Image (tube, rainbow, N blue to C red; front, side, top):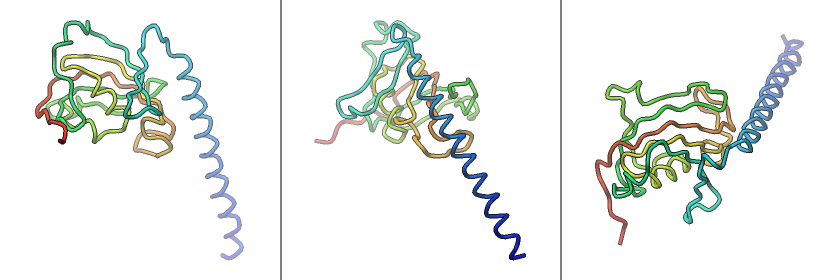
Length: 168
């Protein structure tokens, strides 16, 4: 049995190295993907309160028609519908799997990229968001998702259930 330990340790370290190499390749693919974003279609949004983070937003509606609608604050309770995929189009999750097909949350309770996007949208806006992994889950391994995954959301902000005021 003691003779088996070095073989098992070698096999385990080989698996770890393979995963690391796989994740580094995936990271490089996600970095390359960001360089292909058509800036004539997408708007890069980097708010003053998070200048090192950004998202890319492609609007699917005429924003002049929603310009007078409410925009959520960080602590507002919003209702949205979404589909989430990675850069290869692999579906990760969606709100349609929920009983009422809606996702209810406060922007500040999401990854910073989603927080940025939700507080940029007006009720009724529909958009495709590209959230770079450093504004998403970064190097975290999440269920159904590798580390360094850029998040691609197809999102519609349906309503603001509770519009909170900023703290005085």
